[in-house]
Each structure stands twice: as structure tokens, then as C-alpha cells.
Amino acid sequence: MIWGEQAMTVGQKLHQCLAQLEGAAADLKTFCLDTQDQTAQKLYAQLSETLQNQIINPLKSRVNYVESEEPQYKVYQQAMQQGEMPQPHQPEQYDR
Image (cartoon, rainbow, N blue to C red; front, side, top):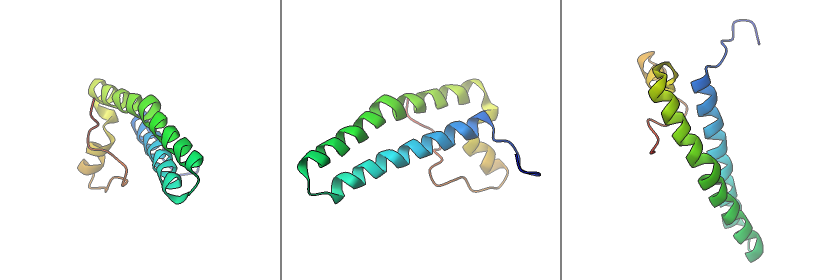
């Protein structure tokens, strides 16, 4: 850890991971739109959908659970209370 840098909380790590996964799913959708190859389009669309349904959605549910059980992990609310702007991908609350 760099001197003066604060360690990330579990909540921050979960949100960061989730944002990265959502970015990867969005990249796959972009790849789908950017190619003319029908096979590649189908592959990218399937991978994006699988990532969303098999990883992102369950992780969102886990984040909701963690935040309901451990309020100190509510990254978005903490940032707002401290007057900081949350990262663009930080959700207010995920659907269960």
C-alpha cells in the first residue's frame, strides 16, 4: 500500500468489481455491434448475456445483501454523506 493511501473497504471492492464486470459486458455488446461476422456477433452477444445473468446479477444480489447486513459497506451513501461524488458506475441500489 502506498503511504497515505487508505485501504479499500469490502463494499468498495465489491462495487469496483461489479463496475468492472459491467464494463466487460458492455464491451462485449460493443464488439457485437462493431463486427460484420455473424458468428462473432452471436458469440459476443451470448457472452455478454451469460456474464450478465450468471455473474453480474448474482453479484448485485450479494452486494445488496452485504449492504443490508453491514450498513458501513454502503459505498454510495457513504460517499454522499462525505460530500464526495461516487464513481459513474456506482449504483444507488441494485434490484434483487
